[in-house]
Image (cartoon, rainbow, N blue to C red; front, side, top):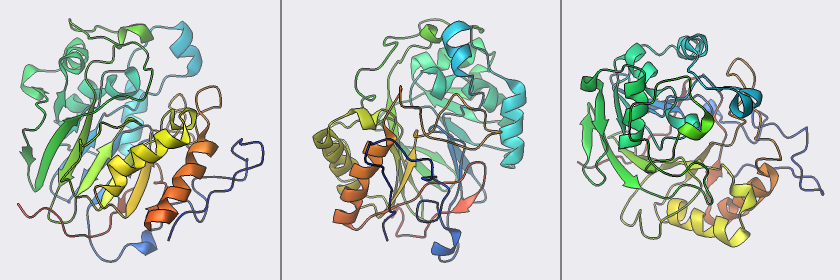
Length: 318
């Protein structure tokens, strides 16, 4: 089954199109039996757990407003972080895998690690953000692509993949970043995607909407968490190549969009798509729907701060 996305003639996402609506929302009754659980925190922050071990990506929970992003110096918000963790019933995390060092990925990773006991895995730039938050060195690890790490029943492999086209604030953070800091201080650093292999199924997480040809050759995943940020500004040909390299090659039959929502809204509010000055979500969704229909793939939007179960599949054979 494929999600049906309603798009108005103007190409603007219509007010009656809601990712939590029937036909778009993730349906728990579609899942048969036990499996990995997943919690979505907006942007590309997700928590995947098998009941014993938990893996988080990014850990971005503060979500400063657009006015703050433009005019203020940014600082992690403990109240917002604690609210999100409490609502999702998160106490212990084994690893936080950080995609790159822009604020909407790495800004809170060090503090979330301190609150949950996690180890932060990221680029040198990401680790310098965490150092600025006084995260102990014992909780910091430099990502090494192609060298899997183990966390309980999870085998995790990082792939260096490109950020979405024309990224802002390129470069590296070469010293501990003490907050508060301007948005421009959150340099991109390196960018990663992550494969989580488990006996209950494999999940590929691609936070940034871009592809590296052949990066995932030989990778098998039942579920892909597909980054959508700025995808609506790309061409139809770009979107198809991205889909083919990430979804079609891996054989995934379930796609869960991430990085589609307005990351400048608090998690106390419902998730809504990025504003039109940032992206055109209607165009991106319309193209993805056609590709999903072609390949027999289901697209579902995860609820925020609510644990759901991923389908059981033929997981890692390791």
